[in-house]
Length: 54
Image (cartoon, rainbow, N blue to C red; front, side, top):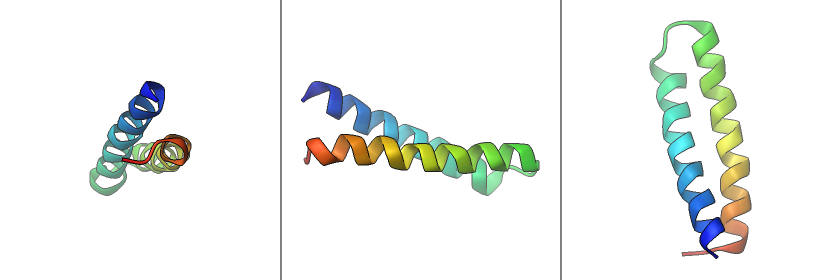
């Protein structure tokens, strides 16, 4: 159970970072990295919350 909680926390942090980068950066490369982080956080959180539900 502990690894799913940690994965959920990491997914939330990655989503916050990705959304910050995608919305506020002005360079297209940083915006693309933010978008990739958002998609990666979706997969991380789907993995975590499929087994652990608070």
